[in-house]
Length: 321
Image (tube, rainbow, N blue to C red; front, side, top):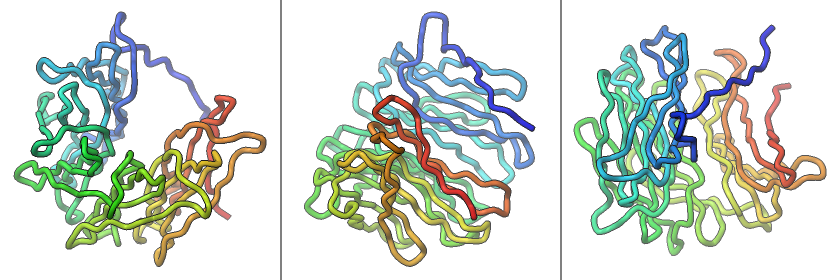
């Protein structure tokens, strides 16, 4: 039987500590290979560093920063794959101190920094998140990096297979965007195209989603839990009831009553569910949300982590019957 372990990953260098995380991904060198973790962080030197496993040992690598720039904010990390049998390659998206989008990416032989720029006449104000999209099961994956600009609108920097593009996603009708709530890709069945969903919180403290239906982008008002407003988001995930099923979005948020709520799709309609709080505690800060699968044929199960007012970490999780 296995057991839990703590491992000290140390710091990027003897003189540089970790300021914040950028994102974590797993890498596979081929479809049958073991997954290898890569954790990207922003150091106290405002540069990017990665802690990665080579299959036998952990390493710290200094990724540096864009020429003459510092890293001030994360957007997220993803892995890109040129085909189903190709190695996965990490991409870490960040906002520089020039308020432009940058990506540190592995081309299969070396690391590169690329200036993704910013939308015309705009600067980047806040991150939203990243995802990848695959047009068919055999296609390459294409990164989508969502950000919020200084006019409180959503923009996406995306790869079409030949070049990078900036697209103005706008904002919900009459409602500027305050901050991100999570980015995911949804798939109607295992052979269908993947479709991005970007969840945001408006200045009215309600949840909105900008989503691709396969032909056009849409904004949908998800509202808020009955009689409540949204204070913060925990994260967005997708759920599959079995390997052949469609994926269903779940978005976890903290309400103005310091309780956990989830906005979820049941296959026909959106629902709000009150997840409550641990006994005698309130949810003070968001953690993360993930899905867990007990075996390749099992249903996926959501886990939502929050930090309570006593600075303890709690998880709200779904158990199977």
